[in-house]
Length: 232
Image (cartoon, rainbow, N blue to C red):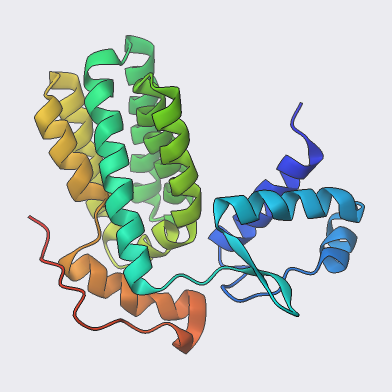
């Protein structure tokens, strides 16, 4: 059974991912305990878990607050995410079972349903299952854990990207390329498709920076001379 602190961590993490708790928001233990109808001990444990994930930070005289991420840091995180997922899909090309490929196809079908419904929120959750299916199919537990951990840190920003016009359709098309490469057993194509899907460059970088104001207000601005080339 999942510990109470784990469930609370997931609940707060979800509020961060959906923008209910914005970067810089203070996380008061007393208020959270009252809202979730629990004691302060599991709240404190949940906040420690979120601190370890990098989703919150401790500030002098303010306590726990939702972490702010600069554009430069965000791009670096997406670069690492792309390489972790590339490693996962490379291993999955060789190690994926028929049942695991069926799970990936099921997640892909759920993404398609969300695209048809034009439901960015439904796509967000189906998209997570799609990526988690790839992590699991790598059959490398440590790699899957690292990919999932960074995925959690990037959840608010991955969700934000899906708000850009036509992004969920493009994301689905990119998923299709990954599925086709895995079906064909083409590791090189699978790796290239995943990298192009995850990495934030060119127009996608500009779109993300433009959209950050919805999540963080005017405090976040693009840093000059980041030097990213358009995606291939």
